[in-house]
Length: 101
Image (cartoon, rainbow, N blue to C red; front, side, top):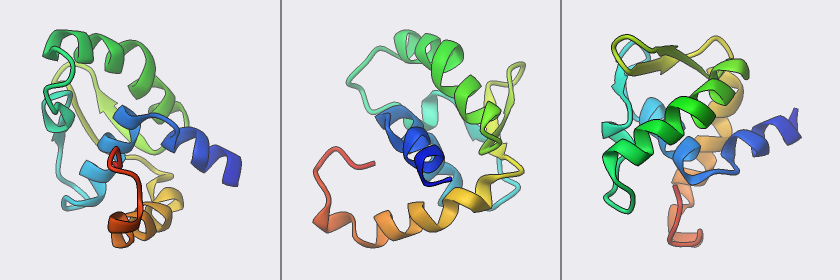
């Protein structure tokens, strides 16, 4: 299970999605990619990357539910599996490299 957690966390965009979900109410939709867009990539490029790679992976792992029509995600059935790791990292964010999340 640890490998699975770190696989999900191994990409900046996936980490941002997971952190966005952690920081919101458990039933709240997160607009993708707007909620994780930081300006380093174009919104169109980020949307394509999220659609073809990151969201399918997170959904397959059960960490997110992805509504392709509304382009939103909510916490998936396995989100509580990764939530403690996310919380630990956020609590110690000042000790982590600048690129976190």
